[in-house]
Length: 425
Image (cartoon, rainbow, N blue to C red):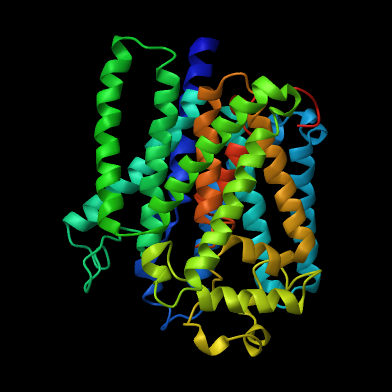
């Protein structure tokens, strides 16, 4: 076997690994894998099913970490976004030392580091078309399994009362992001294909159109509000960036790079005002008008943050600590272990400093998009980042072993989505 053939085979194997890993990080397939074993938890208490889930996700992500260590450039720490990423993780790691539930914070921190490694691996290993193809293929696998589950009427695949689709994901708000991810992957592929239009791309476009149709149909059948509105917010942010980019290009050329993060900030402020306004109107249901209503959960999270604003409760520890429920409007909260807001998770886990470091990582990561001379080439990555940031206002998506965190990191750090203009990007 020639060296060229060996290299090609290894590359194909890596693509298959990336597709499989990203699909499994949607979590539903892994939970389904151990669902039968979980039924015997009451008969055999130890080891818990959580041990199996954790070990499975670790095994899935270890190869990405190993490959990343070999390939990550030394210039990574010379970039501002890289510095903020490392500082963010180091601070969250330190919170384990004073966590109110350290035995939970430590595995959660390990999971976060591993999933960050997956995102960086995707960003530094694959070309643009490969990355978007991997995303589309991985999400398509999740959609296919869910369609089979619905077609064969598996337990829990469809809501018994409201008849919305859940598939293999146990929750419609876990299936909907998979469908949305497939659509974003297709947008990315199309952005590349339009640069290489040929007869082969025409046939590929037919297949992509079919996948897009399935993704839209599944998204509709989930009846989830979070993902469709997060997609709408991402498109709105892209339009704001396009306008800001056009204005600064002609009037303030030096500010072109800052147009992208400024657009994200503007849309974030508009979202915050909209959610506060709609949520405060007694005549309008926040559940109907915006995303899913989370008022009671957010109230408890915010009062919990005010209890420990500087150092936090420890990464992902607050909602699993009995002391946390002795403050705030705990009586208005249903039984849950999640804040249903990624930003609250960051504030609760590591306090103000964690949020500052996270914001710096996002700012400089998005700013790198503005360094590209081709708007069309970076638009899909910008959409992907904004989608995750918007969706995280309603769910705890800033966690380890979750594909959306890996995609956020890939979107912020991928060299294929930016052309660096200096070490400070």
